[in-house]
Length: 403
Image 1 (spheres, rainbow, N blue to C red):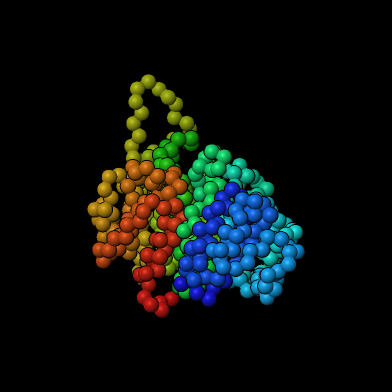
Image 2 (cartoon, rainbow, N blue to C red):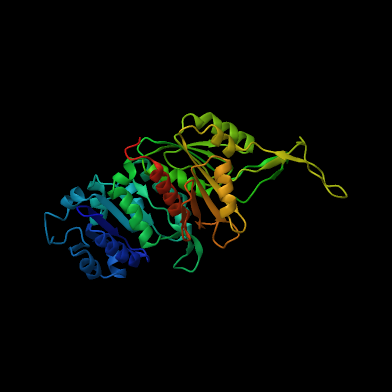
């Protein structure tokens, strides 16, 4: 699939450098021409001969070393690349590029290339959360550089947190999205409306009914659509997630507010992905003062909130509409009923009682149901990869040449 494509893989001195070996191997298996640049620190973790053998090309480790093939190396390599993939990308290399420092072969070549640059960061989770690193990351994103977010899991230090390098197959899949423009051309200029996160239904100023949704799934869908070239608007309930770069975010809190923002943006949208976990009920009465604890039980009367998905389905027209069914127990039959009742094109179903699935988790395991009866069952994947698979399913519903 990648025949005729040239990928420059930059390997830096993170402990996850060993995973870059499989990344290079997988790129070569797909037919790509691969050239590897290693920093001095990386060469102390993995022997350059390993990459030289797998890539079948010289490996550059020093800025001023005698080149093996002058027409390929140095600035010519920056010009020839279709993609620069930095894996693993340490805080050091990201900081260098963000601040215009070019003091070794890798940073110099990144500065010289006009090809897309994709960083796959991997580091201690405290380093990843460090505000200096986050400033550098946002600066590069604002300049058009791309990032594959690290995963949450056990790190080399034994600590658990976000900073783990994604698996090689996920890295290669992301690289292929840049190298195969036909896969993203269909999304260029498409208008995608996404909802995400929970809602809060207050019965006094400090207490509310809600659910554990983190918003991660909807945010990943919004980011994936943006990466494919779509115009994206995100209607979000209260979350702690940063706003996705290049996405217009409409912050809401209650189901009524989310309903209003969705309906205001509906005429604009061509694709609607309703990933939010909207509360089905809200208190009938709101107390303007905090309800004091008294003897005995407290009875709160509830009423239905607006059914956003059903209303969008009623007004769908020619739009593509994707819903979610977060269920307990076997979700398929419940998802089928929801698909028909709410006039959806696709529904994404999962059993939130399964480990590693659903609210608050970094991963998800879903089934995608189509109106024609097809079902696509996905294994346990990162929510980022699930988002990509959902958009692949949406794209498969467009007629050839449809725009």
